[in-house]
Picture 1 (cartoon, one colour):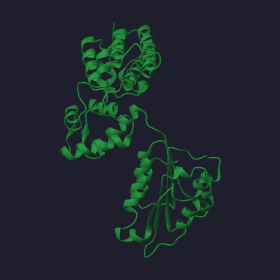
Picture 2 (cartoon, one colour; picture 1 turned 45 degrees about the horizontal axis):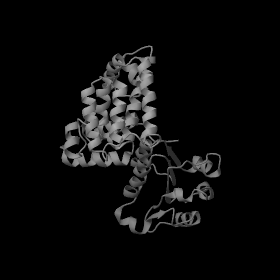
Picture 3 (cartoon, rainbow, N blue to C red; picture 1 turned 90 degrees about the horizontal axis):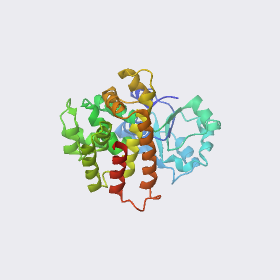
Length: 334
């Protein structure tokens, strides 16, 4: 099964298949491939008669096959793109008979987001012979940071590791959302420049000093004053700093710290690989390990689990959100 980069490379080199079945949890890559086919496979003058975009909620598999079997008009090929094809999940395997003998002058693109194809059924087997079956998984947070760095370099910019971490921490693992914010920055910053935390704060509005990344760092250094100052900022800006995400961020940090304590070798390369973090951040775990022996790390994880339950309204009637975060930090660092 090919990855998105290889599929795009083949398309750019004129290697075009009759069927593309794009599936999986991460919509960004599905859209990236489908958009490239929609934008570049046909000349602008050919698109009016030979390019069609259908939507799964409005068509049947028979409708798709009927359109795919048409012949192009005054062009070498036609393109049929089916978006939101997951709406046809109950009948999608009926497409197998077409894929077994696809129209060679048609490029059929099926965007099957957030779902997987049953590889035991006929459609998956037919795609293996006569098409491209692309399937992806949602990226983890550390993978999103790496993807973001590669994307920025590809566009002719650089990004500070801390800046990448702040963006992903704030926006989550939705690649489309991250990409949209990066595009805004690239419209403002000159090509070749570095994207810094200051640029993100000035142009996107994410504070470079008051964010989950800085809170984790303060907790790791056992800097109670700084941690409570950030906590106070969070409680004053709850929409931008939801408690559930802060707890999740701290939980991930202490879980990694638990793994750090268990490593037999703690050189930068080993730690980076084992924890799945950029080498730039390894020093923070080294520092935190000095402040939190394994027993205290385990206790912090238990406190975070308890706070997570309370933050979702279970057994927390005595605590408001500000009190819950303040109490949590005091218990972890006290």
